[in-house]
Amino acid sequence: MTHLESALREGFEVKVNIDENACQECLSSHANVASTKPFHQELNALHSILLMSGSPVIDISLAFSEAFAVIIFCKMDSILVLADDIRRRCSASFSCGDQKDLMYPFWIPGREDCGHPDFKLGCNASFAELTIFSVKFRILEMDYSSRVIRLSRSDYIGNICPLNPVSAPFDENVIPFSPDTEMLTIYYDCRTELSQSVSTYVGEISCHDDVRSYYVTRNLSSPLLSGVRGLINDFKGICRRNVSIPASRPALDTLERTPTPDNLKKALEE
Picture (cartoon, rainbow, N blue to C red):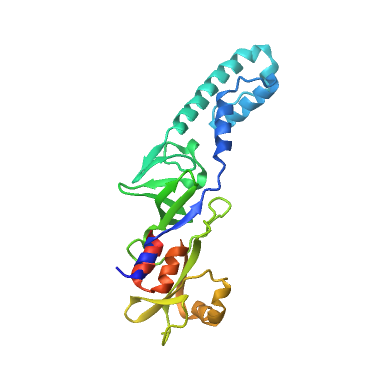
């Protein structure tokens, strides 16, 4: 295995930036509707819960009519049962592929109420995948104590030259990168061949016999690339496709020291 492949295999880390406490407080409030709030506030709360649950909604203006009091309190009982069921289902962890003890923000079909909309998982017999802008990322590890998820692009596992790869933009308001994650950019099918190594931060890979491809191991905005800025700008015009992929900074450091395909794969996969 080459050092280039090793860098791909390392994967990268993102932070979970979702407030699960707010979710738990929401569930708790739904399960304790009969609280010390004024009666009209309780009815307004019930009205909101009915809308969210998809249940038939009674006009809240009828709440103060004695004729409908029994109906309202019967509906309250049904909502309490619904909220208690949601809380009971969401308090239990679940498994997906090789990942165990998963909870919020992840969810799978049947647990839609228990997770964040952006964190639906696909479960394979041997791994769990998260889809971000149509690109699948394999979950390598989830650490709830540190709120760090380690991911790897599924299409790059075992393959540094996938068919028609695309970049996947990350919403860093939801899943910001960890401090040691940096963007690795790969330029495919370039109509030129570098005569020699031009920089520690630029490497070459071979996907096809008749064309060359190159990678850059630093964020494209990095001042460390000032000496090769012209070359990188040229890549945009002479290369058919470019893809930016999050990768582990320590693995990229190894790749810079020893630029081999094994180390590139390790950075993307582990």
